[in-house]
Length: 388
Image (cartoon, rainbow, N blue to C red; front, side, top):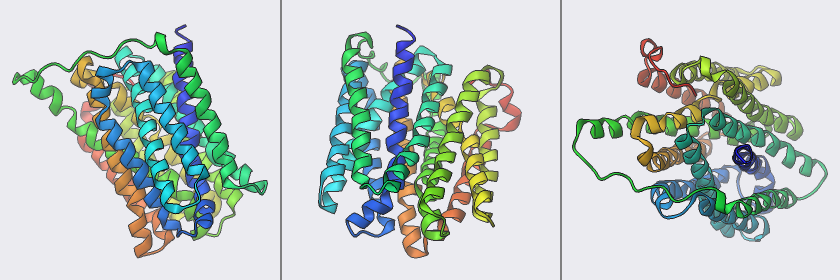
């Protein structure tokens, strides 16, 4: 039974990764169907992220009123309904409610699994779960690329996504009684030094979540359009390059899950973001297509330990009773980061052109590396005993 409740979160994140990365590759075809500019990808991202952020901010309250199984079912149902709306409507304006609903459902499912893994202290499971997301995100571009390569509509790809999430919904329903009761309420506010330190310690990772998720999603969402529209690279090659980014992210997390006990969370976080900075520079410089591909692979590998490490450290910062609320705040901050970079990229692209994506990504990588260095100074990292 314990193995089953590791497999379900991992597979659940695989499925969310597939749908999360597929949308960016499908977007040029979606935009053509609705006669919209490429930059309107930022609008879709903004709406989806708004739903994700709003649901994340409510995570603590939801976790105190509903069991883990109930939250998983509700979140998965929202995703299925949202994707169905997105895949079947005939008007541009009707895409937005579908994006909002699927984004909200994704937040509930993802945050619920993060809280579950953090409270149980399963750091290896946390890394495997997020590796699953990276693995799914690798398959997403391949799925849409295959559908388009066969001459089929992008809607066929979305039908596959709906089916995958429907299967997960059935899995959550069949295991509903085994996920546990709602979490206890957060402790009442106090003015003790320990309480103040606990919440103050959450501020740096909340900021880092915004920077990290913004950079990761901007890279995954905009690199395909950068390659196809800005650098004249073919659809299939571009899809494979984006798939390589997500594959590298997933592989890195599997490695961390295997040898993570030998490496502190802060060291993995700091070293990884510096590696990602190198990859972002290669992506910008890229005199040849293969250099851009290597850059994406390096970015993915460098980013791999960040998200699961920060999530695993949450209970130690704020206590188990506050973990659900803290996870929601961190995920909500990540949603804000998605607005500032992936969705905000629309304004930058409209002001310049699609080629501006590469230098903006390099700037995001530099900001992330600098913030990590400030929050986790090198001399303090060896004092950390928590592994990702």
